[in-house]
Image (tube, rainbow, N blue to C red):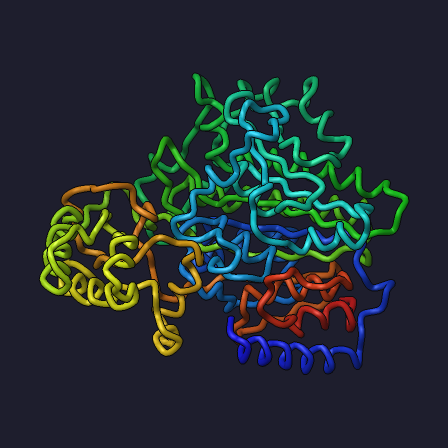
Length: 533
């Protein structure tokens, strides 16, 4: 970010904070518990369609007693939920927090220095290059606050927590135990208890089954025959815990553990605020196939997850009281294609990454001399030999632009994007969103976007994203609730990078280092002008 942009951001922040300071948040209004519910894999149009069948105590309660922002925007295409989770916790884009397109999270979280707790995997957040709201809270409270993340999988838990949390917890794929990393040292009492005796998942897994909890009829007109409306899945074999984690039953396990953590926190004598992040996934799988949200399994996943939220809110209110809680719910768009697996797709074009590599190399050789200019090519990215370009004294920016222009003329290519772009080019909508998605450390030179009707005829190297990147804006929901308040809906756009600075203001702490936005005023109003129904 250049000096002019930094100055503009600073002045904007001072103006907003000056306006807000006329009605500052009082110390007694700082919530004792901030519960952040993250819903991954959500289609908001589907969520809204199923809303009438949720009852009044789950998501609908959060809407009725809080503020619903219907047009929340991450400002970048999401190819994996960890990108959005990091943005929500840091207030920064993937280009800054480095969890973006092409990031190898598995390698990033692997550790030789830390051991797994209840898992054979050696995982740690030690290499995560960013600061979260929770990190700042623990630093300022001298670790007297607590910051936890509870999720089904390690990546979501560790990336949401960051380096300075009290703990991050997930279910181990092999043992079925709640696991963590030795990097964290402030575990709640319930962490040991949840894995012992009859309460442990290992003791109950063989008796558990996933069958429809939702009514058997469909809520949308995209139904199958009635004979297919019922289902029943059990968990056996070597991968029983992996299979379990791909069903909404795992969200119920997350809820059980979270309730125990909330109970632990409610007995803390110190009055320091704490943060609990909960990650629920609304995608359900059988094997590697994701169920359609229109399927009985898809509907049941939404209904069960809403019930889990209902249980959390009930525990929260009982343990802390309405006045002491602040609840945030954000949705993260679905990254899987929303089609039935048996639906055939009409292919109009073909694309070969091998042919793209060869022809692009010939084109660049014609411009700059015969050489191996292209190192590799996948169906969504091109990688140039940057050392060769530097050796020849050429401009990387120019070579990228020439390659992008050439590839854009290929059959089946919808767009190309040279990663070394000018400020003027970033102002273009597609370039603006892709720019946010790519970490600054990326070695990608040209992003390739294929037309939806393009068939990939070969697979040369691993793709950056398993599915095509959608550059069009995808609406998400953001709900901010102080239980017992009066609901309102906001239809004007709101930036998801503004969530972390807003939470920081509510907790009376500084925002994370890389935060780029100012607080959302409507969320702060909930703290100041709370109205009972």
